[in-house]
Image (cartoon, rainbow, N blue to C red):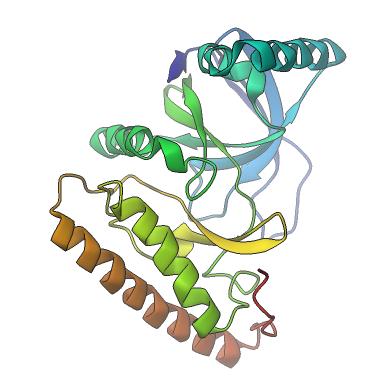
Length: 250
């Protein structure tokens, strides 16, 4: 994982809806590249998680294209050595919360342990930097909506349960248990037109568990999430914000 430092910049941009965190211009350094981006906090409950769109100059576009051409010939070495030049247009910048040093380290360890699932079940980790005088992770933005939102709660329970179970089992099969199982950390995402669940927030991941416990925990956490999902659907129905169900995209 690449670590970089640099003095960040953060300035408010145009105001948005009062229901959305304000947009901002962000500047930071990642490896050999100075990055400027615009975005906002994921939501008011997670001000340390910024969803950003990178601004690329014409010169940066040329450099990035050359790196991509070189990676086709040189394989993954170039991407691992210079991840800053392989960033997608949209990223997530997740800063360490105050006094959460151990949780930050645990999340980094989880991403390494789950390397083969990056970009498939969990976000891709590009590296870490120092941002606003604290450590921060640069992650891919997986898109989609959390199951706690009306836009993410559109599947029938019978369709959702196998997606959740598959995502959780993918982690446990590699020896990791996600220990913050709430709807906010599970996103309904469309991947090449197919629905799937992606998992975020690995700060509370647990390692070194027995195979028996891992198999049990995937099943019980799936059931626990399904109970939360039903409760959230009932709340949305009562509050008049529930969206119509739609068929599973397969």
